[in-house]
Image (cartoon, rainbow, N blue to C red; front, side, top):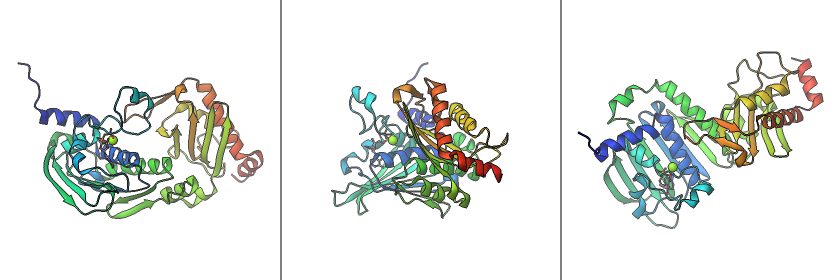
Length: 336
Ligand code: ADP
Ligand code: MG
């Protein structure tokens, strides 16, 4: 007997693909807030995001007659035609996140566009709208998500400990804060403000705020252009190094990526400056022609493929050598 699944079952299955764990919800909500044009965003989690996630922004808000539509699968304001697919400038466009989040949690939406006098509050329990009422609220959008996977216990069992789940969210929030230095981003974990960035576009200040390591004050600025590439960011001088690559974060065209090619370029630049097994701290942003890279578009993957690995490696190497400067690098090496 072949059956078409009931909507409430198919919703939960589809949701499982977008929403694997709390960090996936935080990522989707944060990206929506960025897409909304907000310049101030606050993210709060409790218990690794399993029991509570709240994302508040001062962006464009959602019109009263659209609040329920926003939660339908394939409902998006970001594309209209097939042609739009080739020129997407927003982070989202699939129209699946809110539908997926709502299917496996209890979700509250509070929203008001700046031009409206009153806002709207919508309550959804596992895809069922249980309340949709007018409400007084600041302009922008707040989404509160509680009780993740309350209606799919099998999935809940696969979640890791609170600290493991919050660790993933802390990493995501830190990376996003670096990628969006022009947005004030506040992050609260179990009632503690972990960071609140200034939103003044200063990478160095953002790094200091997010990682709270005094020694990062001495990071060298990378600012280098070569045909086909611009490399910017901050790197440690040879006097500061680590035993792992954990403190190396790379962005390609604004997206966080993992890349052996960038690692290689970086290592090459420090070759004569660091002992084997020591790694620099590096926050590097590579800008290049989008046509020369394939970023895996699966939302949870970070792999990137360059059409010309050697050229990328060389651009990174030259940018880093330029930032370290011969004299400074020698001085650093001497006191190491
Ligand atoms: P997508 O981001 O792919 O369009 P989502 O399911 O994440 O799909 O969101 C659906 C729609 O809801 C968005 O296209 C947008 O119009 C609206 N929306 C979601 N979050 C916000 C927000 N924080 N501020 C304003 N509008 C939002
Ligand atoms: Mg989205």
